[in-house]
Amino acid sequence: MKKSIILLLFIACVSGRIASAQTISGEAPRFRVAVQGGYGYRLGKIQESGQNVIDQHNKKLKWGVVYGADATWFVANDFGFGLKFNNLRSKAEDAVTITYDDGSTKSGMYRDVVDLRFLGAMASTRSVTPSGRWIFLVDCGLGYLSLVNNGRVIDPMAIKGGTLGFCADAGVDFRLMNKLYLGLSINAISGTLTSYSLTQDGRTETISLDKDEYETLHHMTASIGLRLYL
Image 1 (tube, helix red, strand yellow):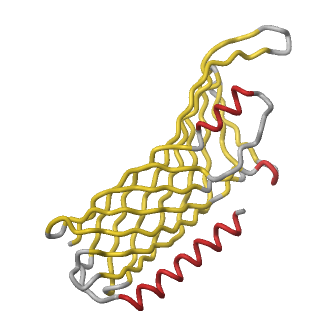
Image 2: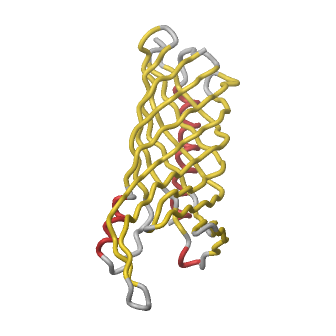
Image 3: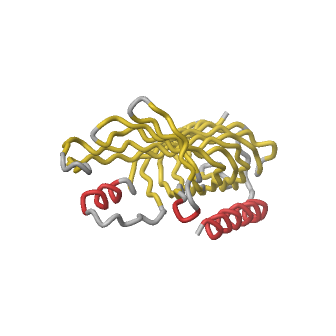
């Protein structure tokens, strides 16, 4: 799964570079700042626990709200470098009752607030229509992909972990006025978590996962936002 996603990201970046080199026709400013928001979907398979409440809870975490920002400097009209930040947040909350070994029970809330954050360096290609009204872009890059979960299983708990992340996106910007554009983009981010830190009951411990327990952080997002060209 991970190898397939990485290969698709690589193909998208190479294809974007070739297409950009063939279609570049207009001029555009060299510096681009973008802010956006939208929705995202986690691609990893849900491990079934056999408990309906938990399985339904985890399914809710597949979807989330995304926001982010980019800054790109184009060293040539069709090629540039920049930085990208992307955050996918998903939430789920359910009432649960835990039964302990001694037969006692405890009821409360089972809550997850999960943030998948990518921060990395990007290479960007673009093609500009002769009028300069439309700009098509393909980006790809590497960075740090982290998972932060501030939730509770009756009592508060926190999970934190990070790994190398791969990112690629494709988008189009449409000029609204002068230097201001409206942009649409589709983004793919890939990474796998092999360990994390768990804070609970005032204690923090590092959990190393077995290979068949690795946490897949792959996700896709679609967003809309404003772009400023300077």
